[in-house]
Length: 253
Image 1 (cartoon, one colour):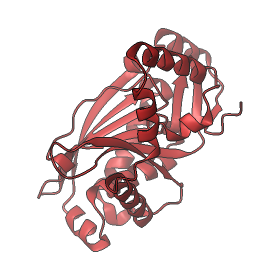
Image 2 (cartoon, rainbow, N blue to C red):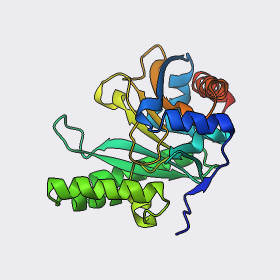
Image 3 (cartoon, helix red, strand yellow):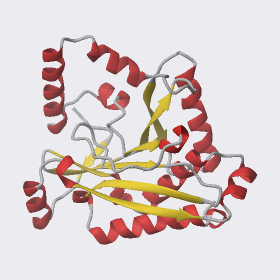
């Protein structure tokens, strides 16, 4: 079965050794926290009529475009690269504390601008809160009806199929963890950025959390990254690029 979402990459000798020593995404996670400080960000968001979440997504999109290695992921000791860019995020079905949450998967084009990102975020939010549901919900609810033993068995089978490039495209399309990255806007619930693990299921090599944008323009962001996708120098340059976009918005939009 042709995997339209990924392409296999050649491995160097050191990369083969690294993947053999660290076979899972969970044990390969490195985590770093960065503190954004921008005196102009509030004015910028107001002038462009966008939310901080959309701007963080836009900064991520620009960074991935500049550093394509961030689209990489590892399955079954093999290095791949996503052909497309998608980001999954937790969304509340309503604004109450007790309200249910779901994972929405947003798909982006490399040339998407800030307004495009905000529009796609608005669309996902409206769909989530309209009661119409999203494809990820239908997928999860379907598996949720299984007995626990059957559910665990199904997950093991699907993980094996995925590692063999045999997982159906329909599941890859709908599953929120088959994405470039997962982002949690914890500031939306008055929270703060946290250190988060990566999931062995799926293809997301990055998990990003951020807290509430403060009145002085400061924002804490935490990145969890699979260190096997690239050497450290490239990852640090990518973080510096992301920080520059966030701190100097007028120069990058």
